[in-house]
Image 1 (cartoon, helix red, strand yellow):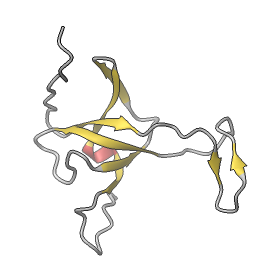
Image 2 (spheres, rainbow, N blue to C red):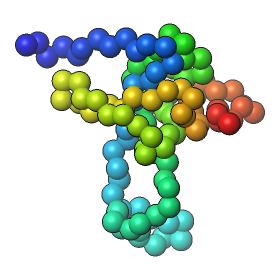
Image 3 (tube, rainbow, N blue to C red):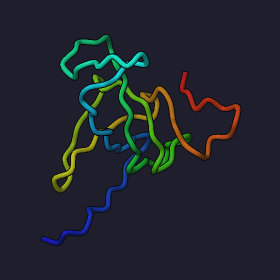
Length: 107
């Protein structure tokens, strides 16, 4: 088997994203360390877009997107874990190409 990456073509409005690594302990703005085991309310997560379907309109490969980690489907491709999302399930997009004055938010 070759070590080359498997080409993936997403369909319709689907996105394949790689979740940011969980940093573990976090630090509040006041400098207080919040342990990774601390229970918090519903927390959204960031991920990098690896592939996008043909009907995805506002997101491009390489963008960072904000999503709810509770609403996800995971898939493993050649040992790497990815998350499948629909474009409408995103809460925000972070990209250098977003012009000033635009929020990148999906509301």
